[in-house]
Length: 231
Ligand SMILES: Nc1ncnc2c1ncn2[C@@H]1O[C@H](COP(=O)(O)OP(=O)(O)OP(=O)(O)O)[C@@H](O)[C@H]1O
Ligand SMILES: [Mg+2]
Image 1 (cartoon, helix red, strand yellow):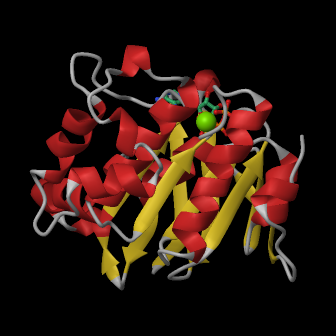
Image 2 (cartoon, helix red, strand yellow):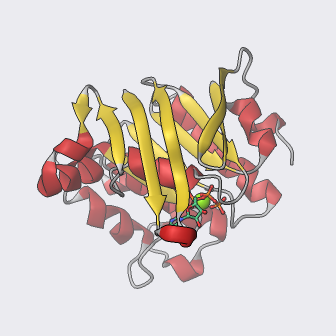
Image 3 (tube, protein in one colour):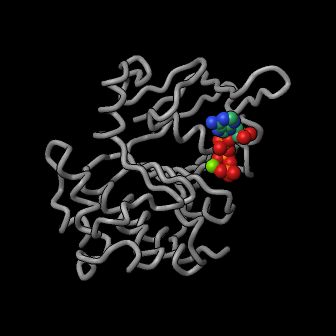
């Protein structure tokens, strides 16, 4: 589904220059649950953003189903981000003035062939919270709304940046369980960025990063269920 070839990205210049990504080569298969691990500053978010068409590389390519997304131009890239990719962030990124249902609708209404917002919220177990505002929802519930928003788009690719970072252990585990279901039952391709080593146990494959480089990229022969992971 995604192929990354010789990708480089630096920020700043001179002595302040940071090589955030250095010669990254990897791929993501359709339906795969990929975990990207690495300590703070290792380049995980930068790599995820590159997959999502959110940042321009200095060099190299990101191919989505064979198409170089950074050669699509501004409009093409906006469309790619909007229609092909679902984003889930640590901080949920919901609109506070809109209910759960309205938050999901806002996105669903702008893509061709969306899943009904009610149905998307049901899939994440929030059928009873349709009319609640984010401030009336727990962190875990807010994260469910953001996952529902991605499901409403029917995008086959979900990019999740520290999706459990703002949650306590138990709630985080439930969110991982939900992402696992999204992967295993709905067949979505799910990429999870985290610095929690243990999360790699549920992955089909783990990419480890250090100082902007991939230092390890290997399949997991026996993924365990999210409910069996503790950290
Ligand atoms: N917009 C930016 N401007 C300047 N430097 C940046 C920018 N974005 C990232 N960097 C730098 O690039 C490097 C990689 O950052 P990145 O956010 O990808 O790390 P990360 O692995 O996601 O870290 P964390 O776990 O803390 O989120 C860091 O040194 C960071 O300071
Ligand atoms: Mg990050």
